[in-house]
Image (cartoon, rainbow, N blue to C red; front, side):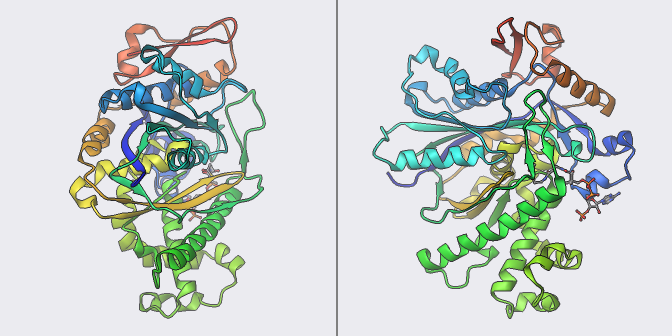
Length: 446
Ligand code: ACO
């Protein structure tokens, strides 16, 4: 099969959000810490009526409905998530409820977990399946989603929630480049979730930033080497990509990362005339290059015009919703497709950097070969964001406390009656109705 890639995209995010300026005031931190320091505007969140099953059900059901896809035409479904509510039963098996009427149970794929990287692994599996002798001609669906919540403290404003569903197949408008994936994996304790009685991670935030940037360097240079050897591109630079999308825990890290790609280009080709203003960083050691704030600032400045043009359009979901863990990179993809007019995207090459703590990371790319106008129309992210509901930080904290109290509980119905459903959720959203005495979860759809 040729032109394997993405044929359809749907994103789900919560209807309710908290504003980061308000959160700064409520948390008593200095004004600008979350909005300028982290680059965040708003943060979406869920109450105890949403879990990973409900958000995945919503994303997949809406994907199938909005693009009018038959469940019989799907031969693989994979879920990437780190929101674990069951040590054995996968989210994928919960999604099989949606296939019931079609009687199609011949659907490969299961869940994949490693921090924010699971969705990327699921995507690679789906592409590989279509390229393999096991493929039977049907579509694959990749689901990448998480509810990202942190304990109170410096990491809390970097939470968020969302789920992206991708329809993968041949003859796609969004086509993955073959033979160019570059991966780096390593053992690190930057962020992990050993305490199964809590939704919160154990996180060393500053270490996680270091690990992220180091992994970015390795993956990017590996990718560039492949571009030179496999595609005979002579002097590839970050400008070989019309857009670059990143895993976006918070937008400031993305801006630093894009600057870091320019630094990597500079190290490969220091005499490039674009780098006249940063020659003082030529002989700095690799280790020092991560520590130097001057270097970071200088490359943010050098990359700024391109950052505005080639990165910002993809940061809509990241700045307005926050970190969606596995869905974060794919939320950036959805933002790009929704934010840039479809006819401007034809012929463009897009780089993707995926990072999951622990750690796993990849740099890969795709090209937009045909019109994505129908995807642009379905996603409609700017308008959907406008119809959200802002809650005060106090209400947000109360809801976070409620999630903590009900995490792992059985034999209960979440608070909130059916009359409040319309205010709480967008239409077409699944929500938890009950967890019975044997922890079996049942859902309703608005
Ligand atoms: N106005 C403007 N900028 C400010 C202000 C202010 N009032 N106050 C602080 N800042 C700046 C700081 O100078 C700093 O800038 P820098 O990054 O250029 O140095 C930035 O805001 C952050 O401030 P810190 O003091 O470093 O923040 P803190 O240590 O409190 O927390 C952190 C930040 C570590 C990112 C935390 O939010 C966290 O742990 N998040 C979760 C981990 C994470 O997302 N890691 C990323 C990769 S792994 C993953 O995806 C989970």
